[in-house]
Amino acid sequence: MAQEEHSQPASVDRPPGLSPAAAALAARCEPQVNELARRMARGVFEQLRGYNELPGDVKDVEIAATARHAIRLFLRGAADGSGWDSMEYFQERAAQRAEEGMPLHLLLRTYTLGSRELWRALREVAGPGEQQALAELTEALFTVADRVVGAVAESYLDERVALAAERHEQRRSRARALLDGRAVVDGPTPDGPVLVLCLRFGTSAAAGGLSPVTVRRLLRRVQAVLDRAFGTEVLAVLDGDGGHVVVPGVVEPPGRLRELLRETVGPELRLAAAATTAGDIPRAARLTSEVVRVAAACGVRPGVHRLEDVLLEYHLSRPSEGSARIVAMLDPLADRPELVETLRTHLEQRQDRRATAQLLNLHPNSVDNRIARIQDLTGLDLADPRDVALALAALLLRDADTGVTA
Image (cartoon, rainbow, N blue to C red; front, side, top):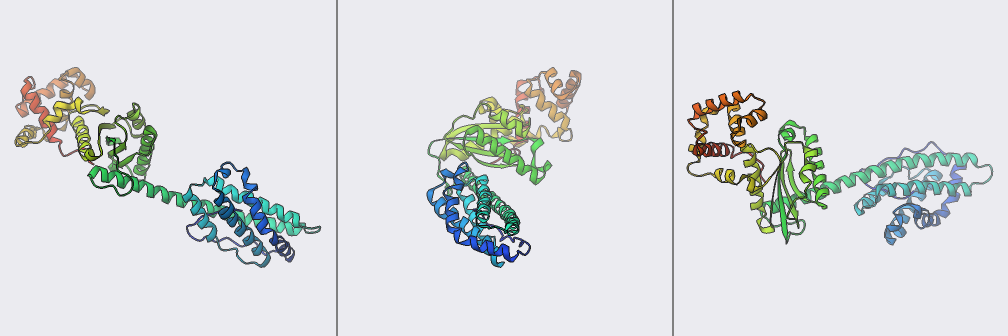
């Protein structure tokens, strides 16, 4: 047997009472413990894929010591009934291996191969007429190995989960600092170009409609897509609605990024990007948030949005002393959401009644009737370019409090 990890000290059920013959056989094998542990660490385990890549001190000191402790614990437990209950040593070693990044399959196979080598040693020491004693020790070895491997795997995975959560929080904390313009504590500050993304998932992925567990799974998948697309662990602050992403050393998002994210999030995904420098990340975050908000407010279909795509709308959405009066023009539509949506879609479609009807699943005549009703209620003439600009500004300013923020 070979290595393990730690969480709560596990308890191993003591095998049924061994006969004096089995105890005597175990006692005769104990003088071979040191040699057997060395042979495992520098021979038997060499056949395992990835074992030779481990540092020499890990193999010669830590793995050999763990194997020696495991063998002696089993043999003494078989001989005098002591030492069956303590798994803490193996659990601590397993946690250490997890922190060092040793693969779990490699760790577990050191235990299974170690158990086999100990059985072979017992078989070699057993003399004529000790078949029953050897069978008892074999059964005991199976029982102990099963419990040890289970405890090792559980402790290893607990440690890996804890390490992953710690790394995730460090990345999130670093992203928050950059987006807020604060000094970065955990990790370096970017010294070159930086790409800032704003993601808005849309109603199908909104946090209010999903359970916390579903949201966590969604965010893990989104983070995995981002890491894979950019070829690095990107910094992100995300929730069920979306959020911001900071990618140092990049000025353009990968071409397939939106497609990959859309497969994970859904068709309502909106995305905006801005290239900047480390000192200007907060401004870039605000800009991308506004571009996404403006695109949604003026009816642009979900997709990748650039400032150039909504330049006029962005300008019209800036608050001023006259903003309240402009917004008030749409007050007569407050109880008619279908008219607001018709107006939004009609303006986005450059007042093409057929295109508007198709998007809203209406007959073109119904669109005409709604537009006429909008004009009657608001006093706006949508054939007048000035009134069209006022209507667009009113829609944008009306939605000014919505959207994704850093």
